[in-house]
Image (tube, rainbow, N blue to C red; front, side, top):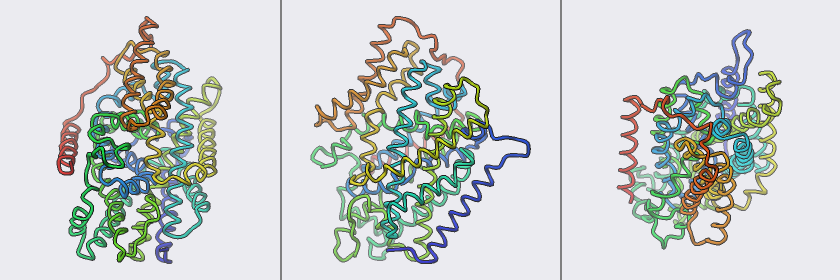
Length: 526
């Protein structure tokens, strides 16, 4: 293992080029001072291709590449449900929720909750998201990224955390969402090409040099259980991916919360030029999601098969080391390119997460306290300060929180699953049921955590994905009961009459292709 001089030159060259491009894109025209719309929503000028690429670049981070590949090593292709079902979820968000958010001209998800309910709901959810993004998502991206660097180069994990944090700050802190989103085009190209390359190398190694197609045949022959999309109850991973329950249960809640009501993701679509551009970007992202298991999960399965062969010379210490171990198979030069692709995924997600933290803190926590007395320049400065503070905290707590985790991806999913049901209930009923009240939403937010804790410790036999569904239904019931107790139609109910839910023919055709492709994949690997 290790990077040679040419590999290091490629990685350093990429880093310098990315920072230079981000800085260039962040420059404003003479006489124009960067305001909050410029910094947090890229001036609402993103084209569809930037929206779609940025959605995927923000999503495919170390927690996805390293974590999901590790789960592929343990579980197999079934973990790809998060990716393929996400493609359909994106289409649902683009048609039914995005038009509502854009119509109300919001910057943040908490801002929407205040418009629909009240300041209490906004504040509670703002604090929750800030804590989640800082202590779970940002921390996981840093930790898994540093772990990958350590596995490939031997570079100390602590120093790896610091280097990634500094790189992310240099790349995204000044320019905000525009710098992140526009450079994500480069990141996604590098990510997809590098990912395809590592899959090719892994499959070729499995086949003994006979090529990737033969390598895939070997995987199917030697590890057929790794290609079951629907796990049986006797599978040791059933508690994480409970068979048919994945298709009809909590997975929908997990994906809707992530892709539709998650500031970190939806902020890209909110920064689009128009609703049509945002929706085309979402279809583009849905197509890219279909590719992700090929470049993330398959290398994990290949690592499993190779590790069973004593002659392969490949040893995987623990599941989350599967992808970095396979990366080490690449030849000199190519290894640097693939390593740069991994770094691209890490810093893109770090930059996106930092920008979302700064947006929520500045607009939903800081600005209300100052009652409009702050200048636009001051808001941008506060946003940068919030980003910097969050990344420093994440560096400090990364190892204590995740140092002993075997499958970080599953850990992240289960932890966020404590809050996901309440978020989905609040947004779905808040948008489509005029009768839902602020008191009901507030109780659902608190009840989501309470119900999940009870389910985790007193109904441990229930798979966590099923628990997410049951808690969602419980939260919906809480909102309904409390709203009927209030007996008053909320003054802030959403009027759907003036919202354009119609979609273009391009969107409809793209959506049909994505749905058909997902159905075919499930039929093939049932």
